[in-house]
Length: 444
Image 1 (tube, one colour):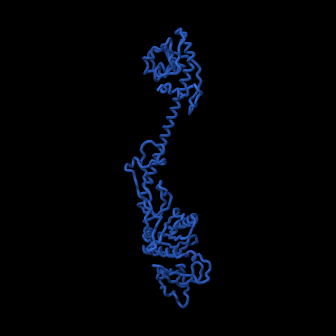
Image 2 (cartoon, one colour):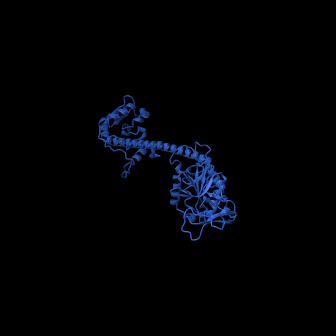
Image 3 (cartoon, one colour):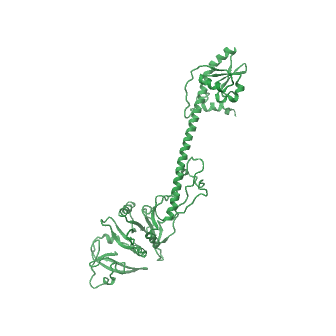
């Protein structure tokens, strides 16, 4: 069963049209005494005109004579559902004022359209393909690419309940109602429903990790619109929209709903609504990237400052430890009595280690210079010890005028604080424990 053939005198004929597409009457070739000079455009075998009714369809088609050879045209037209759908294509296309031709082939044979719809001015051609049999995603994508290379738009139609290629090429799913009503588009077209936070400057709906992991503060709304399922609508309306160029195939781009990357037929208004969300999402992601970079730099700066602080504390502890013995000897020779030295530095002595003679404060080993001003009066009568001239200068600059600051040169081992302070042997303080003790936190 085919619709197009070749007449020996008239050329190409279309059996679906009352004038055969060439201004001739069907009666001149239908059940005539002498067979009409009709042949197949593909295999050149003899054809004859057939008339049948199928439901509400009044069918006119061409059939190959007996013993016909293998023919691609005949195989392409197999199946009544395929046939009827092509008839619907042509009827609806012609109703818009466009021309519709069956089995139009590329000059090089790289493609053959079931129905080729052509605009009145010839500027647009749309191949309408009834794909009722199974086909692989790879094959249908390759066929779509060949149409695109020839500047031919294409839409694939199928009545199969499952077609894995539906999302991969411009296509729709159709259904023919049991009551004989018009063919319906059931999948493949889409409409976009926008949704925005009331305050677009502060997104309050999205809490997922993809919307700004670790970002502090408000983020702008990137849009929460989606592509819901479209209710079935008539095939004629869809084809009219294709011819009017009011619906176009489009790869969905709005992310987050599992539809991005799929091919759908959409109108310009839905495209623009999606475009607004795509742009808003892109701006949001740019802001997230900038904020994340800033916060990463701030985090690294805090970590570096913390490590520097820990290193300073460790160095202070090392200096205080190294000065204990020379301070004891210094104080003994000066005071005439052996002093008692505290175990650690304490806040009351600017985090320095107090030294007592006969139960009274006498000196402080390595007080922290920045803490000295708050305790200046308390520290004024005491001797302050430093491990270097540089440290003495820092302490003297903050101490009371005329304050004694003695330098006892000692060798202090260089022990920079590690990134993650290791646990020390039992009975020896870690840096964290030392910090807590110096701040008085271990006494709470």
